[in-house]
Length: 110
Image (cartoon, rainbow, N blue to C red; front, side, top):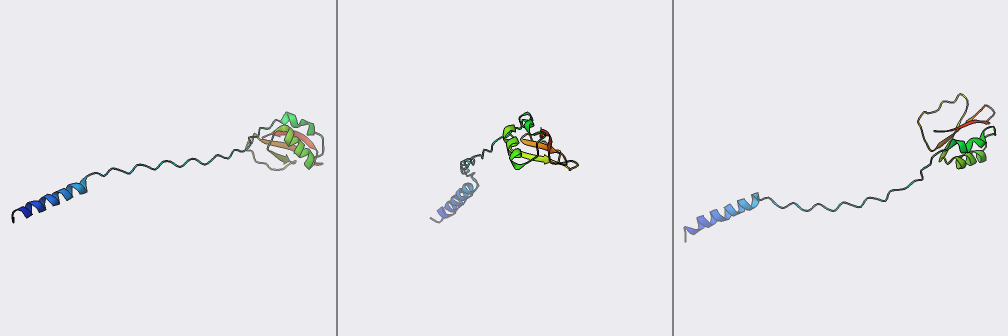
């Protein structure tokens, strides 16, 4: 019986060594989380021709709102004489150019 233990010990140690080195099967990747619902914001497209009725009129909040609504713009920017403005283009913005007396002299988009 004495001869069996060294062989048994060597067999168990070899099996443990092989089991430790064996590649384990990777766990399956978790399913991707569903994408959050995209917020849909209205898309505005300015049409300056529809706001030309404002030219020659004094700028009031009511005129500004009417020009914005008719042009389809999302926002309105008032441009005063000599005022510095940014040059980025925004297709959903109506620009109302006014003179020193605050009368609309021109309309445009951007």
